[in-house]
Length: 452
Image (cartoon, rainbow, N blue to C red; front, side, top):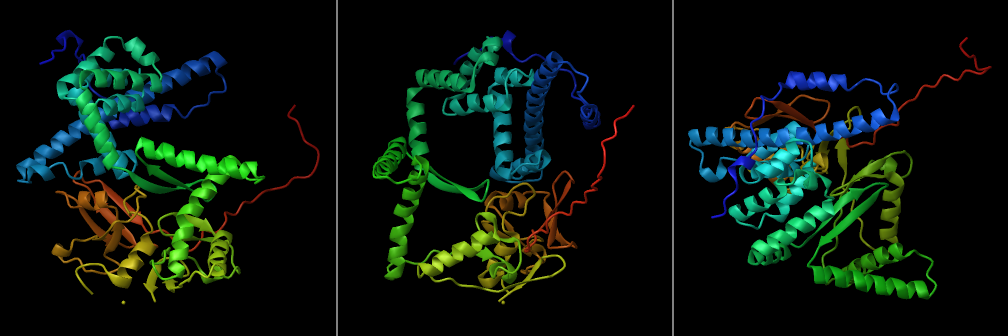
């Protein structure tokens, strides 16, 4: 058993301010900074950074306390232990206006800081470290037993000035080295688990680009990069005008996509199916605007037309299916087809209408097609009562005290009520491109008049 000196525990703090008091502080931050000197601007920047860190520490405490309270209420209601915490992270995410995934991370960090890392929590609440630095400490000690984790936390807390001065890389290296020294076997086991979680991912990037990522074993990642670099260097030496980065990206695409296209042509593989939502006017080039690519997001019309034309030139089959939208609102209302499960064309319709998870601030890909009003409570299997959700949001919605129902709106709207009584509405995106904003500018010709 590893003991930590009791006189180094987190000292008691005063009562937290009410939300109305915080709103008053926010209002006070709306003033102008024109009268400040440069030195005062720097001082205020530092003070606000410390305030941001301290606020993150308070958010951690509140999230951990909410988790304890909600679990106790669920236990009193007879909910099975493994389901008592369901939906708490989703409430944290809604309160912080972030995705459920980030809400889960915030809640996990909050519990760890409160229960196992009091010194790191104190540094956060004092504004000495950022929430991300606290996350790094928790992440690099996650494989350790509780006593070892508390020991690393206490070692860092003995010199808060040094902790505050560390950069992120230095802090990560120090904590990782200490974890390896305390329990090398657990660190090795963690690496093995990490290798089992290898995967690829896709997310939108600025300027209609996409980030395609791959989490690989280190030897595989290094090898893939080396092969791409070597081939790119060869082509550059042969006079290819593309940059090294362009060549490596293009080689990756060619080596993955080209064999599949060839296999589709000879019938040995199934084709790639990519769903696009675009108006006929945009598709034919008669109207401005763009469309929506399932799994990615909005793209401009010229790119869609170029993409389809390229596939036609390559003898790739292009299938079109008509969708019908209300002219005034852009709401999808029908598609070129009743059951307990959403399937067939109704499932496709819901995915194309909602585009991403309908939970506010989530934006995750749709994994589940959900009855807004539960089927067990009489909710019909219909487009009006259906919504696309990610797996985490659908599970959260099944927790004690959550309800949802369709509501009137300009487009399909669902109102979700959390166990604390807070209500959140979600409206399906428009299926038509947004009109460019109108800007009225008054042009005045003549001499510039200066005030006397």
